[in-house]
Image 1 (spheres, rainbow, N blue to C red):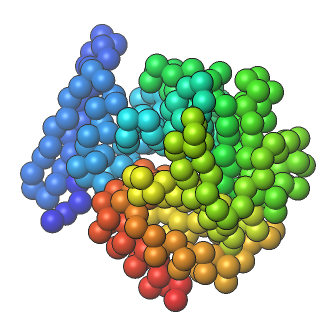
Image 2: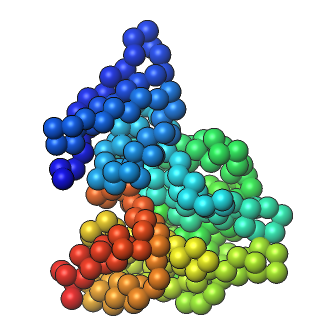
Length: 290
C-alpha cells in the first residue's frame, strides 16, 4: 500500500479557521476537515508516515506546536518550527504539591531563524490547562543547547530545579546554566512517598553525559538524541563516540518499550508507539550498527 501524502490544503475564504486537507493514498483520497488543528493528531496516529508532514503543516498554518496527551499525566510537545529544536515531554502533577516535571525544554530562541521556541512551548502547556510556573524539575537528556537552553530561563523565572549528568555539566555551565541535581544510572523516585518511579540510564555516545529516562509503569522510554525513527544521534560532536552509542542502543533495545519518545521529529513525529513498531525501529538501526 502506498504511503499517504498530502495532496492539497484548502483554506476557507473570508479568513475562516476551517480548513480541509486532502491526502492521496494510491488512487484513493482521504479528506480531513476540522476547525481544530489538534485533530490532525488522529491522522498522525493512523498514518505515521504523515506525522512529520503534519508537523510542518501546522507550522505553515501559523499554529502553535501540536499537543499529544499520551497518558493522563504525560504530554508530548513535538517541535514544529523551521529551525533546529527538540521535542519536549511533560509529566503533569508528578511532584509534591502538584508540580510538573519537564524533560528537555529546548531552546529559548532558535539560533538561525530566531523562532520563540520557549514561548511556543509555554503557550502549548497553557493550552492544556497547565501552568509553566508549576514546573518544579527540569530533566535534561544532555547538554546541547537545543535541549537545555530554556532550562536556564525556567530556573531563573520559576525556581525550577535542573537535573543533568555530571559529564555534560561543563557544557551546560558554559551556557550560563546551573545544575541542582546530578543524575546517574539508577532509580529516580518522585512525588509523595516516591509514588512515581523512573529509571535513569547513562546512555553515552551522542554526548558523554547523555541519559535516557524509562518509565516502567507505562513502558515509556524518553530517548533524547540516542535514537530516532530509523536513525541515531550524531557522534561527531565533541565527546561523541560511535562505539559508545552502539553499546547504549544495544542495552536500551533489551527494555520492554511500548512508547519510544525521541528528541527530534526526524522522519516522523518522534513518537513511535506499539511494541512491535519500537522493536522494528531497533532492528532497523541494529542492521547498520552491529
